[in-house]
Structure formats: C-alpha cells, structure tokens
Image (tube, rainbow, N blue to C red; front, side, top):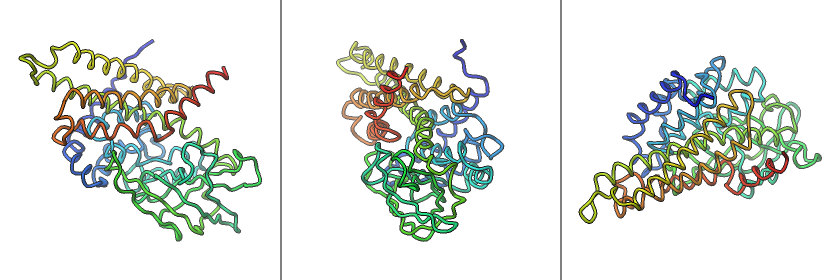
Length: 380
C-alpha cells in the first residue's frame, strides 16, 4: 500500500500552488468585494492545462484524471474558492458529456472548454427543487427534429458566463418519475434563454451564479446526452463524481485556515507569551490538523478509485460530507484564533469563513449525503 503521490502528481500540485499564489492571491479581495468573475485568470489556467484537467488528452484535457483534478482544486482553493471555482468548474456539466455523450458531442464541446475558449454549466437546480432532483419541472417536448424546452433553473454556477449548459429536463412525463428525465445540451445564446446574475452571496462571490429562464427554447434532438429517459441516473452518477471536487475545495480551504492560523499564533502574544504557547490554542490547531489529514485520505482515495475504474460512491459522499464539516470547523477556529482581527478584511480568514458554508450546501447538502451513505450502508 503506497500513500505517496507520484512525481508527476507532486509537480502538478506544485504548479497549481504557484499559479494560484501568483494569479489568484493578489486578485482575491478585489474580486470578492466586486463579485467579479475572472475570465483572464481562467484563460491563463487553461493555458497551463488546469481547466478540464480530468478530461483525456484525446478531447483536449490534460489527462490527469479525477485525482489530478482534485490536487489542482485543493491548491487553488487555498487562495480563493470563488476564483478557484472559475477554473475547476469551468467544465461543469462536461462530466455528463464525457461520460454519456456521443463522439460528435465530445469532440464539439470538450476541447473548447479545456482550451479556455468556452465555459460550460450544469443547469440542474430549480427554484423549488434542489436536493430533490426528482422534483424538477423543466419540460422538453419533442417537435419534429427538435426539443422545445420550458422551465426555470436556479443557483446555476457559470450561469451568465457560460457558452452552453447541460440541462436536466422531463422528456417522458408518462414514465415513472425517475425514468422521465433526460440531459440536453442547450446553447446559452439560444432564443428564449434569459440569464440573470444572482448578487449578494455570502461567499464564493467571484464565482458566477445565476437564475436561468427557458421559454420555448428550441434545440435539435441531437443535443440529447446519452439515452432519453436516463437523465436521472446520469445526473446521480454525475454528482457522485463531482462531489470529489467539492471535497477537494474543502481540503484546500481547510489547509489555508490551518497554515494561516499557525503563522498568526506564533507571532501574536498574549499575557507575555506567544498565543501558540497556550494549551487551548494547541488544542484548536491539533483538532484542525487531524480533521484535515482524515479528509485528505477520503479525497485522495475516492478520486483514485474513480480513476482506477472502481468508484466508491459511498466514499465520495463521505468525502463531501466530511469536507463541508471540516471546512466550516477550520474556518470557525481560524477566526477565533485571530480574535478581532479575524473579523475584518485585513485577514483572509473572515472570507474563508463565509466561503466555507457553501461546501455543506451545493453538490448535495450534508443531509443528502447522510441519506446517500445510509442507503449504501444498509444495502451491503
């Protein structure tokens, strides 16, 4: 049993860190305050093979697999999770095309995303249905060689900056609920698509989030991803994979909280001694470090198993669940260790505190992960 990363993976991790330190770190505060999406940083990241890095070289990606992508996500999330999302999630939605799309779809949609020319999105969540995927209402009705789509999507990452989206739609309403859905590629500039940016988010403010209305949007039936009626199963598999990326975000943010806190408590004095000399301070650092190491094992192993063709979706759900908890825990302790300084923008821990909470919400709430893990445990 070998827990060491390969030399190539270590180099990839180091490259991602140095890129984030140079490009993301200096822009983090401005982009957070101005809710500014970072096109240029994303394009530079693409030039370095960091966008859609999990996609095989055949379709324009770096071919580093899910583990390699998790390593990139971990490092860039140390500096700003919102800008990091503009890189790691620039290919969001492409997972479905890569897994289930036709050869023509893969060749048409994947390379431009990897090169930084285009951005994709996954249009899944709706105003009245998030975790309850079976409650989606968007309809796609066949009309000759086209689908005509009507519905609304909510909280869509890359919603106003994407060039195309993969949308979950009801195509077979007469079938049982889980067999009624299909995934369809929708051009963002199609007639009838209206996109509105959501402002005022608590965290990940540099990431673009939008509400999307689809009104009589006509797309060719060749835009169907995989088989009609398989959309629910495809989406569940999609989330089982992307949860590892979210857990990677949590790992990076948690590591940043610990590293910054260690530096601060070594420099800060209280009652005539360094803050780090006190047992309670050491307890907080220790608890953060233990959770981070446990999370690292979950992230790396669940990603590695996917690359090995032996995905363990219960493990991926565990990584996502524990990742959100760890990030919130570490961010909270980081603010506490910084005291009043942790509450002001002079120090990044206040932003990490705001960013961390989303990790317990998107790509499946922590409650949804509990249900997933519980079902797997009882099905053994």
